[in-house]
Image 1: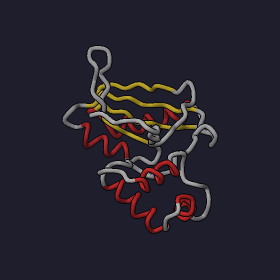
Image 2 (image 1 turned 120 degrees about the vertical axis):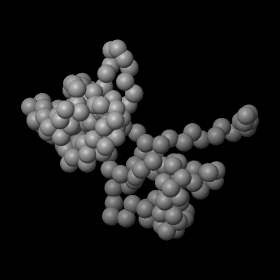
Image 3 (image 1 turned 30 degrees about the vertical axis):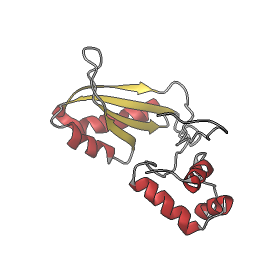
Amino acid sequence: MTLDAIDRALIAATQEGLPLCPRPYAAVAERIGIAEAEVRRRLARMLERGIVRRIGAVPNHYRLGYRANGMSVWDVADEAVDRLGSEVGALPFVSHCYRRPRRLPDWPYNLFAMVHGRSRAEVEAKVAEIARLLGDAARGHTILYSLRILKKTGLRVRQPRENASCSA
């Protein structure tokens, strides 16, 4: 899909996040000079085509009091990882869950599940629930705790330079 000038303006207007107001799509529409329905239609089309992966809230867990953030990593039997990963990802306390390749011999883990808690004890209790769900399919795991907060950003569109030429 080729992005036109309006698509680019829409991405630029939303790449720092949607406005915090009762009608954020209307505010974006007013900012770029199109109808609210057109904003929604274009965003839906970009979502459908994979240009935009998702539209959702990105909370700052630390500011919400969740000071212990742990990425639980699991060595799960390959034949069960997709099914069990879906179950782990559906747990209400897992913010995101995904499969990654192992890097043997040093890194046997292939399933990652992020858990947030107000304390490490809370995170460890939630990870114990994941362990119960995975059962014998999990051959090992560990928890990697966040040491600092990283700034989360969404899609960025580089604005073309004037008089710049494109090459294939």
